[in-house]
Image (cartoon, rainbow over all chains, first blue to last red; front, side, top):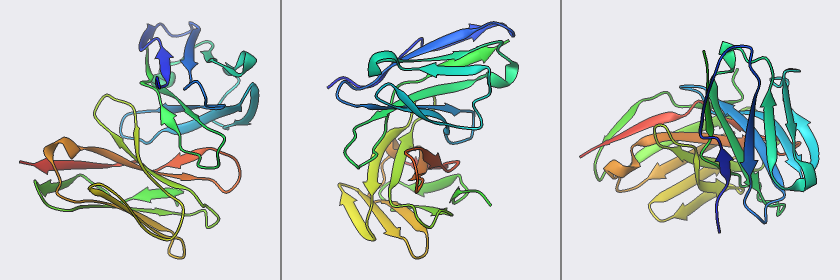
Length: 114
Length: 111
């Protein structure tokens, strides 16, 4: 049972550039989540998909952020016109639709905006 | 008031002792509670989930839930240096599937 995978693991970009991250969930999981974590804080929810439908979005998700999950498999998170405040660890998690809501995290993508 | 609050750390215990980590939450309707362990530079790892009042034991870990007091705790028995990490309490909101996390408690187990 392979875990959640994320790509890339690290990304350094200049302010104003666009970046895209990919998440592949655990194969039998139909729910996929994106969180953001900064140093010394717990993860903050960004958005959630059930299959291909985006069911929840945080107010943190400004119009520069967009997420997709075509065909209900992998997901991408795009940040347009990056700002230094976007520097964080971007975490993807997945869970089964079994009522347990146990979420399993991938290794994360560390974004540094210079 | 923060939605999920954890006891401020860092917490330091000697090897072999019991480490006690506490968490309170504000959403009275929450039904699902989780403890994650996060090593420095790594992502959170799920170690316990609890849904009913009382205790749930898994090896050296015991999660305790009191919904009336809106309180969740994690006990680590026979603490080992390898338990040194940040422990995150997470609560599923009443509606939806998102988890709300506390800021975490950093635990150090001294040999």
